[in-house]
Length: 164
Image (cartoon, rainbow, N blue to C red; front, side):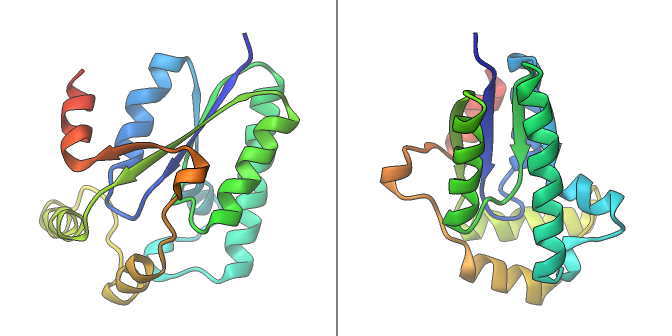
């Protein structure tokens, strides 16, 4: 059976990392997290990262994912995956190594995102995102269109889906 590449797509605080940790064991997959790659590189996206650095991180993520898929290991990519050309690049990588491809879009409304961020600011469970970066991120986010055939999870779906 061909390995699978599951590409997560969603804004900050949409639950991508939580979903990645839930999905990966079920698929015997490895998580490739662009946030973790940035951390290894001494970068933190919550403060804003120059485009050139995101390109380097994305290139490294593609190389790690390609190696895993080529070895027969399924991969869950934990990333915002916006704009569209980034999703198209992951789709092309999967096709190139003959892996199955699933785009999993966490379609979470902005009110929920802001509530989760506020809860995080109290708990400190993860690093925060500056107001300026979050505002720009939410304004610029490019959600997948119907032609991309995403599997869509909403806030309610995510709660019940994670419980299963």
